[in-house]
Image 1 (tube, rainbow, N blue to C red):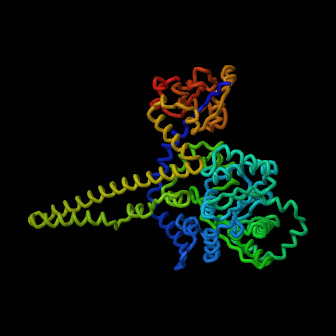
Image 2 (tube, one colour):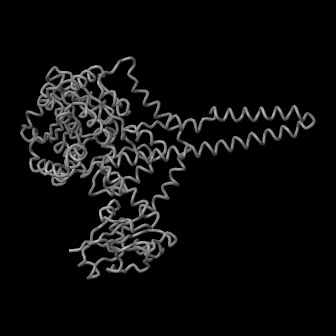
Image 3 (cartoon, one colour):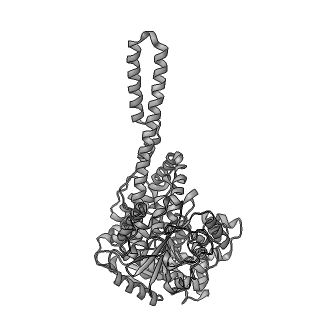
Length: 569
């Protein structure tokens, strides 16, 4: 059966609006960036000479927020880097609760940290907390987390397993082998998934129900003697909930995560736990439990948080509120172009932190931006000095016109200052925009692959120049949001324009769809749609080989796509 592809260009319409939003932040860029620089200076490790290449890399990328013992962590990682026998290495781990089907941009930070460690010969464990998800992490929460149903946890686990395997292994194995590994991982979900590499550390994925399902509740409660209630209540992560409704369930979460650390140490020689900076309270409790039970010193490494507007962190538990944001790391759920465009329009003051933590790009725009906004800039001083020199010469040659000369000096100085400000602002815009392009290309390539980034740029040019004859593969169009429709639905006129608008989140109700259509801004290819009951037919589609496609667009008639630039094959 022939498939028909509907592509929405709503994102191009949104793009212009985002540019306006970004401009309003520019005045605050130096202040925000100074704070970022100051925070990074907290990671100053004094005169200690780091030996581990991995740890050096983590500091260079500004990924580290805090380490519990830098010397011993460095010693462990350095030993792993030089140890050929896997059995003699120590592992690190990070946990992911299964509150959502998808990972988001913020989850990339600990995963990239693990990826760097794995690239330097350290075995990494990703612990899927299907048991702890049923309790819910109360850290820094003001209200009770929404409960995740068991069937949802199973679905979330399967999808996140696939995402993790793709992220870590897509540059190591072919797509066919990748799919086989993902299939095997899901079939054997009640076993440990271990992928070993000759020149890297192992990738291990497991879930904590593997031990909690076998544990007697009384045996677990006995570990409670090692947790002081008074000490737990003083933890910063509980301050918000203690004012509202801190429950025994909340306190049990921290004991479960602590036991996870202890179990992984006993089973996999896991000595370091990785987590966001908001996880330090949980990590610290695990370190203390190991000291009590095994008289063993374990370690913690927390990463900086990737934040969104108003310095709000990305959150899986807020999926319903943020599901329309293209921040989700999933090739099937998220349009590659929307993901790319989201990063392309990151706030100016956050660009540097995103570049540092999410990419390998050697870009440092902090100093350049500060120079743009620094009133003591040397370029400005040179211009002012030249202006004053010229003015002094005029004064000597025109002693009889002192008053006029003073006015000329003032006017010239003001003009040069204004011109210089304009020049510096243009320079700033060029540098920040170039940095954003490189950021969006790099991160999108990391998630979706370099070939996808090439398709995005190709399709952007095609749409910008109305060169539809250059579309030679239906997969190129799929970088945009799309739906697939059968020919049967078209022949029976079962596809209504209002339903299509709701499908693409252009409208949420029939009433809203009708209002959009009445504004004369909905186009199907070059056809203006002004009837909310309009049903699509085969004439609305453009043939491409054995497929058909149409472009749904929000925009003015001025930007209308011309049919004579689209060729049928």
